[in-house]
Every structure is written in C-alpha cells, then in structure tokens.
Image 1 (cartoon, helix red, strand yellow):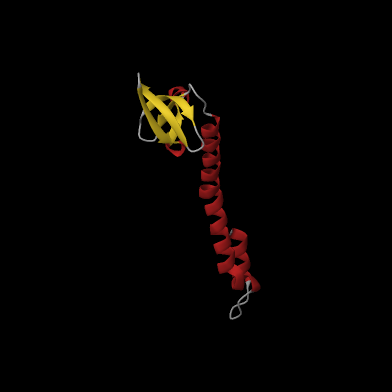
Image 2 (tube, one colour):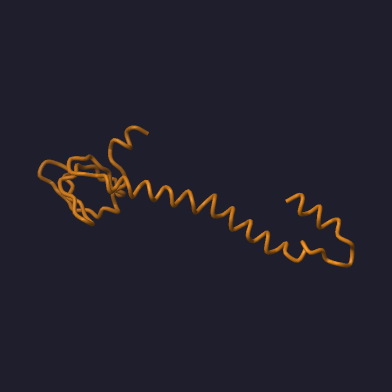
Amino acid sequence: MNLLFAILLLAPEGQPSEWAKYQPIIMMVAIVAIFYFLMIRPQQKKQKTIQKAREALKTGDRIVTAGGIHGRIREVNETTMLIEVADGVRIRVDKMSVFASSGDIQSK
C-alpha cells in the first residue's frame, strides 16, 4: 500500500496519474480479498469438518445435539437419527442438529 501512495504522490499536480484512476477499484478488490480469506474461507473449512464428522457417526456413538441433549445413537437414517437419552427413552432428531460426539467435547 505504501508503494501505491508513493506513486500517487510523485504524480505531477493538476493531472491525475494512471494509478489514481484505479485506486478505488484496487481498494475494493483488496477489501473483498481480505474479507474472503479472513472470514468466508475459514467458515467454509469449519462447515466441511463438521459435515464429515456428522457423516462418520454410527450406531452406538455418544453425541450431543445443538440443544444440549446427550445420548447414544440407536439408528441412523438419511436425514434423521434415533437417539436413546435414557433407558427406553428414544427421540428422533435431525442430523443437522447434532453438534458433536461426546468424545470430541470431553477431549477439548
């Protein structure tokens, strides 16, 4: 950025330099690039790891839902899971509501 400002300062007065014409465009591109690499890309990576962890869940795994319900998986379907939260108490939850396996939470 300092190089760009130095080039702009060296331009003759009264005439905008070639760089001065493109400065707003360059700044906008830089802001979009920074936004992408600092916010969007890390979030996409996190979503991919969560999705892989959800796909790896199988019957017998202990899990925690987004609502804080702890249980053991008894059945896995395409979009839902049957979770046993106590002896004989089973609930069906959406796969997207599964936050993590209990082992992942205890290891952190």
